[in-house]
Length: 558
Image (cartoon, rainbow, N blue to C red; front, side):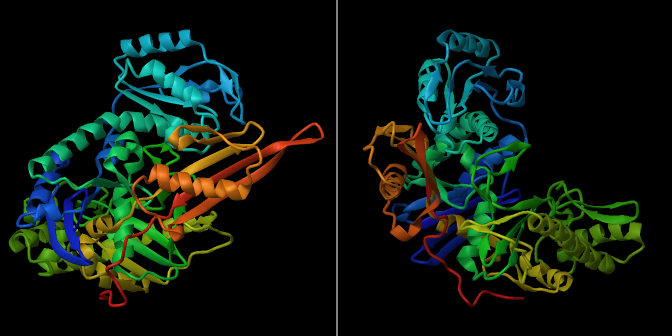
């Protein structure tokens, strides 16, 4: 028995799935000011009359990390950065309190000069005077040699509750992005720890011992224990749940647009030849470019409860949400009110919905009926304009999917697939404006929770081998190991899969078809006229995906 929860801006959706069947669904309003209570109340209602001993796993898509970063409610972070020769320090500085230390490691992982311990003591005193309790550590070539960061951690951990090391977050070398990824991870670690403690305590009260997993931005899940170390990987887990919901419920083929229309925002996804697009370098959040692997998505302030106003005699929808729909006690007319007035939604008060349409219509010299129809039409047209811009941007640069780089690929959508509360009601208008077939699954309103429940564990490691030094390094694991100088690329591939399956996924059994190498290289190293050894680099991952699908060819269509 699997539980999936998706925490959106307006609602929390929850589902129980057992033996490929949906057993129970719950949808409740979310209080973003008290997220833990909202989540717990949803779980409590979901498990009512359910034998909790049969719950095998709880998968949660949470906005806790994303909201903390976007709303600037993070912990104060002190960064210790070892730059070495190259970029000027001021180009890497994130805050005025960053400390740059001496010493450096070269591109092969050889420590050319050690850092000065006295500098670290001074940095500790500096951070203490600034009331900093979360530290991020980034040295330029730590993916090639994590030892300097590991040594720095020993100096710091007795004085600070959080010490985040860059090599544990990414094995890639992009130093500016790795610094920012480390900074964000340190900034949300305490917030995520409190969140995890509250959720775990609540589950313990109900004697629920099932393991908890959190959705990552790449569409996979990570155990709560691992998420506590790397909470930055859980940002944008909401869009990831959306895409997994699409995959779990619909057969998506060819080039296509995917829309998750929520109460607050709409998330836009694009498929190329039936495969979702990927961010090749990493996602950007709050002006921070990171190394966090992620599905490509664009979120826009357009949802069922987006505020509708008249500005310069023109109808505007969003980007802000002022609260509930007018007919449900909110302050501003919304798309939801239009559907309630047209009797397409059987919630709220129709008289209030009519008043909402009248208030807007009076400013436009339109009847309530004409106003309601205009709102639906304008919402769909605004979606088309936003999607057209997203497609133009995507087609103006190389197209990356989770599988490969598609050279010269131009995406020409053949269909639109939608989920979210307003999906079924909006489908006819969207189809009209796009002149494309518009599809939606039967469980369109809770697809995200279903996607969360069905997602499987993913992850990646980077393996670096220098046969001349007889050294193997897996930076994400902090592993440095001696190897045979005759080790080959084929040997390295086997080792990469071994460390991925055993060390990263510990107790899980991974089939060979679930593992893949996404990048590899092998270079000869020459000293004078002689071959000194080989430099081998391999990046391998467990493919994002689902444990199984619920949908089929019978996906509902408008």
